[in-house]
Image (cartoon, rainbow, N blue to C red):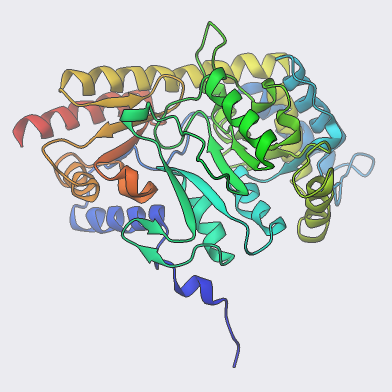
Length: 408
């Protein structure tokens, strides 16, 4: 008889967003014709910008030409895109070698797969609340221990609460690996230069590896420059940190799939250069590369024209977030985030727990949020709302939410 991975049996049967989809499907079946507005999963709604569309069309034409056809591409990504990404870093004063950039089909995939490079018994720490992929992928590899009312026994949770400004504090005993996300999913808050610098110094002194998720850096709105867009803006971070980024939110590529991981050859964790070489080995073995036409589209998004067009789209979502913050604050709710990120972290009203509030919004307003408890123990009592709906749907959702809360 086939023996299966026993660690899956210890996990819940349903991924957080799959459970949300199940409940929404049940609501739609029971209320046919009711227009549900999703502010749960962070999927974009605005179409791809013109420069990206032109690049896609041109790349498709290439694939129909004997002289320009592309088959298997380099697993690390085409040089034209890796060089374009390196120039994006250089524009912020950060020197990244194209050789340290690995193009992929999603930051979620990279974050879930990178843990394959770690020994089974490494110690893992996450901020709490946390993007579930960080935890679940390590649990699938056997690092989770057992599930308790406080989370997984084998994972160290670092509370990020209103009391500490949602900024994680380095623990007294360093873990082997820490996952940091800034701007943060789900809280919508961002680490300033001093806080991130403290983490880099801590990692350099302890030998810890930082897994830095900066998928939402394009939303940072900081005229004073106090919030880094990349961890590599902190001196010495290239020795202790891997950075993960995506075109999903910055350029609307959730349907195209393109992202990248920066794995510096200068990393000291595991031995200098070891993780870089291992990730290259992993990718060449298990991955055949992001499609040529998608990488050409991503290159266009990195062009001056593309950056201008995508920035205008990001601003649409920023305006949505501002409207949401204003509405929720006017209702007397406690709201965090929504300034440097597309997420608003909302304290649930009237003593509701997270899933009760989710169901309340769905039943009373046909609006979908994400229950905070799905992001970890410290997420209980909160809900995450995303600003990725269309402007019209955002206005309608705020009207419905206002009516529902006032009538309750």
